Length: 85
Image (cartoon, rainbow, N blue to C red; front, side):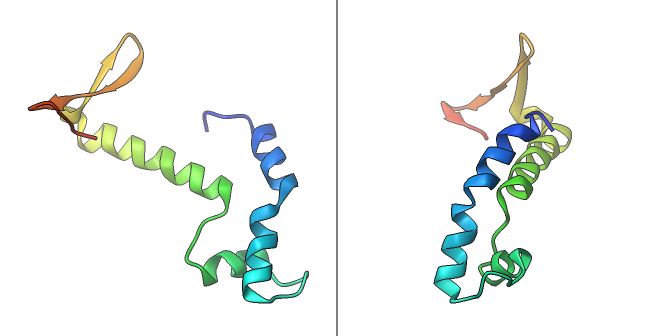
């Protein structure tokens, strides 16, 4: 991963997403967090970040024609003025 776990620890400490999901579903405090997210077909913040990284890697490997690497950074290629990403 490209980000320190301490940043996600701060997000998880706030825990507002879990609280909101509990309130919306009217679930008690000991209801499994995984089930809260599953009921809404959503991902917890850390898993969502991992998914975004994996999607970027997939584009880089399988669609390298739409990505350019310039000076160590990814820059979207443009086709007819449109951004391809």
